[in-house]
Length: 90
Image (cartoon, rainbow, N blue to C red):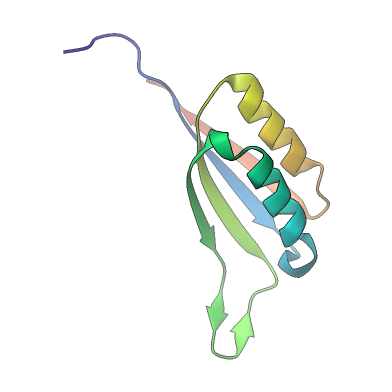
């Protein structure tokens, strides 16, 4: 059995207020930092006659702190994008 400190779990929430105009910029940032993204979940309201102009993306991120910080910095530079981070320490 391996002992020692486990890696933190870091969750990033991304709120996009104008998905139509900002989705490609957000996708470019996510692609550029794809090696830091372990899990990605997208949430927005949709039905047969409605597709929400805003949405939320949840990420579980991994890697060096500087690499995760670069992802967050790139996302925060995009107008209409709000970024929040939660770190669960072990």
